[in-house]
Amino acid sequence: MESLLKRLEIRHLRLIRAIASSGSLSAAASGLHLTQSALSHQLKVLEETLAISLFYRHGKKMVITPAGQRVLEAAGTIFDELTAMHDDLNNLKRGNDVCIRLATECYTSFHWLPRIIPLYQQQYPDVRIQLQPEISNNLCQQLESGELDIAIRMSPSAGKFTNHLLFNDDIVVVMSPDHALARSDSVQPAQLLDQHLLLYPSGKSRLLRAMFNDAQISKLNVTEMPLTEAVLEWCSASLGITLMARWAVKRWSDAGDVVLRSLNVEWANRHWHAVTLKQDMPPYLQDFIDLLKAHPPSDPR
Image 1 (spheres, rainbow, N blue to C red):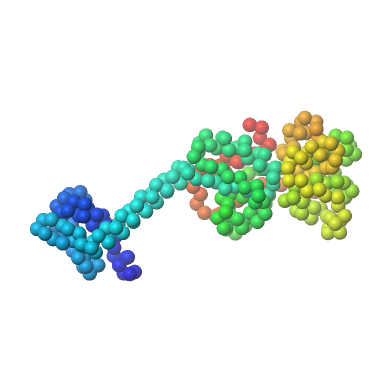
Image 2 (image 1 turned 30 degrees about the vertical axis):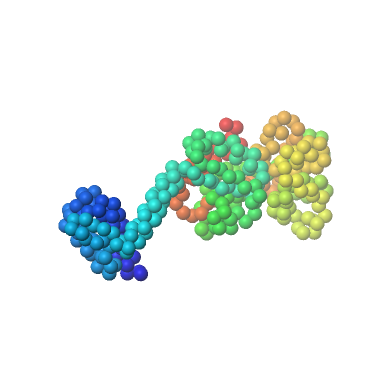
């Protein structure tokens, strides 16, 4: 079998199809732009390779044998697959009928990304962008398994991944203008210990463990809230405070509904990356990442 696959070529399948379709060597040779003697020689070599006759010779007429019919059927399947593959590759190069699956570690990114998608679809109208808010943990594992195409993370990933720096942002403390902590320009982590904290479920553990030990965390008053609008409504009503990216609450702070104070920790300044598998990227994917870089969340355009 392996020896046959090494010797059987696409040109042999074209030969079988041309002879079966035309019924003669001369017509098939003309269609394949070969001399009749060259085509006859190729058919003879092929039949010797397969050790079976593919056509009956009746004068100048060629009649396909059962063995030839089987090869012809296989050739049809192979050519159909090759045509489909060619079309798929062209679609991938053009970005047609393609879906970019995207997830992020931070829920607030889903308020930034929808602004980018219409800009991108002006160039790639047939590419679908699928935001997956249910995936916020183990993003690199999802990339490896093929469940994601892009993961937006706060830190780069080593190994088999490529990291594309998108933008920098900073975490701020968000509160009502009437809150006691609003009297200071910045907030120390220790000042959060006796506060009612409103945090995203996905970011709760990471944020708290960056500031406090287990004993301190166990005594904190924390309410998990997955929706940005709900968190900010509660903050505005003096029902708690939160930690959030400055750009994500800019509209609320500009309106005077909440005030922002710097958080005095080194990690409050973050570097966001679009993480992909380390491989050649199709143009439609690279162009999407370039657009993310060109329009960071703080960009009002």
